[in-house]
Image (cartoon, rainbow, N blue to C red):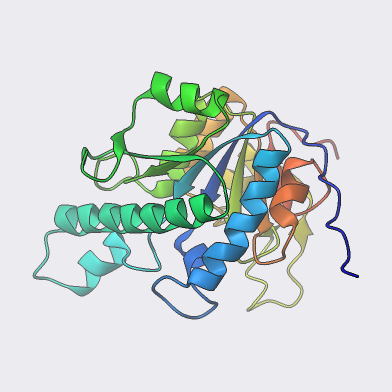
Length: 251
């Protein structure tokens, strides 16, 4: 007799933007795309959708190519070109995630900031929101469509555009620390921190432009470890995991 699946957690948010870094698409310490990792993340996303959450996903592309790093290591490639190459890497990840989700029984739409109608819809705000209202997961790729803008900033902008209740940043660490926990064993993890403190302490959680967008619009951010199965659902349920970035934090 097999164990029955755990009951769905009650979501605390109706509309969520999930930022998936390129690390989500590959095994730890590797690059490229791992279908086993995609299947695992797709199963977690399906549970969110089954609980009634409206979900948009912004993909990173670092598992394939990071435009900034590529341009700095190759003098033959113009920096703007390198950033466009990085945007295309996010589209590759988006296509892989779309197929993995649909194999899991999740309705999806892939939208891109760079027009490529042969593989995806262009990002149109009202159309994106309509898909969400119909219960489809919308995968947002190609960043903002402009070079020199990170996918974190794209996630913050899209959160504002679709009126997301929260921005979830899925990473390989379990929150925001006072220092690099891999280098400093005495680093302290924050359970909550304000936007201003993140900027003032120069904590490397996401770029300042992305933080400013969320701060101006009052969008909370949750940074958490995606590698622990079930954490995405717990994050959306409002459970005490990771680090929350909020307008103000009581001391």
